[in-house]
Image (cartoon, rainbow, N blue to C red; front, side, top):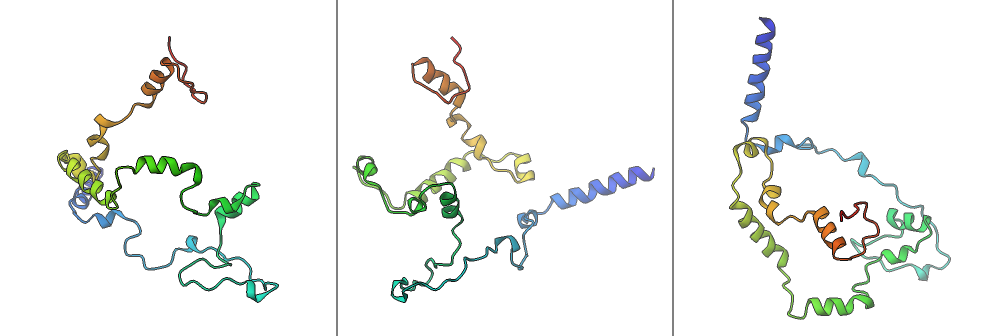
Length: 173
């Protein structure tokens, strides 16, 4: 008898907890004002340059010589050129592609436009009661008809004669 009351009490508490509309309660980091100790990265050692005239001019908010560069350090450790990681704009090999893609102009607000269109499209796919209860998104269900089946597409391309060297799926004849 005691076990029944315990189970009923726990079920009641769980049901009361599910009644909240405050989704911030599901976020474990809500209300924390303390620093994240894992976000602290030690800086590089300070060193005196041979000539002080070679020091770069200070740029507020910009990079510092002692700032850690873990990606560049990893590339250098593996024998690569860390300078290739710098954003230098559109490469010469890609100029023709960018010119062809933007031949009719480009919309600088395309991300906002697409976000609004996506919100309208997903609002037409109303959330089901269990999706509302568990706070899940309708994204996968809304776009299921537009999703690409990678295995089906791969077999289609293989049957058409395309070479898919790294593919683990053999084409069924």
